[in-house]
Image (tube, rainbow, N blue to C red; front, side, top):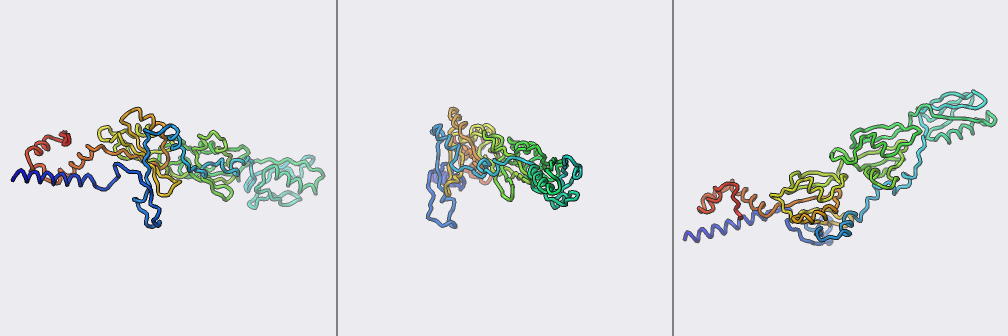
Length: 379
């Protein structure tokens, strides 16, 4: 009779433990499925997300290259797509508070230094006010000659800027040094301005960023400063223009790493991590990690409610070569699941403090528990 009770009790124990192991959470072994597109938007749930399982160990170099270059291109972040930006040739534009010198040949009637007032005008003796605001030097010279030719025969006039006060660009947001840059006759490009703002293209600080916005001529463009540093096309390193505002957002395109790693947390795509490099950086926990299943979860922005889940088996070091070729992208989620034995031991550790089951059942289990934490119950 006692034997029957013991067997019954043992079966009940296994039932309880299997229930604990099946608690809700991340699916340890996700299965490929397609999204159900028959639901209305308000009825979609996590169960409607399409999942594509991709085995990196079996992927060819061409397939991995395709994964590294998604179909959806961030066109708005590529300034070379906008001719208004990259075709601009810098010229200093006059404005209020600028001081200019005028030199009229053969007479000194108009010679002198003039400050452009808040209305954008200068006041010439005997002639009156002339508007020079928003003009470059060549256009300002042409207008001045056209006005004074009614007073002077064949005037030869030279104009120069004495003080550059009106033309500025602003570099603000998630950079180390938010600055106002005064422009003069020497042009300045994006990289030079970024250096002045102490921008670091390889920063791993989430307080700073690489992407942001350019506001120019009442229009707003998305920009990525990393493009200016990395692109072979110099169009990404464009000339800045008067009143440009460059706003850099915080690093919101981070890569999230969690699971059985020594240093879980947030990592940054501008550091160009490959999967192998990130695993090395985060430190795989060799005692607890399931090295057979390292997952990268990536949303497919060109599809509706669909994700790709890339799986890498790194038990064989040769497979790390595939991981080195596979580049991580903004918003990727890297998950290293626990090994089966770790899940078992964690379940046991949750049960032991809350029950006297093992201490009261039978001498075999009782001796095993009292043997200390080094005793492996599954071996």
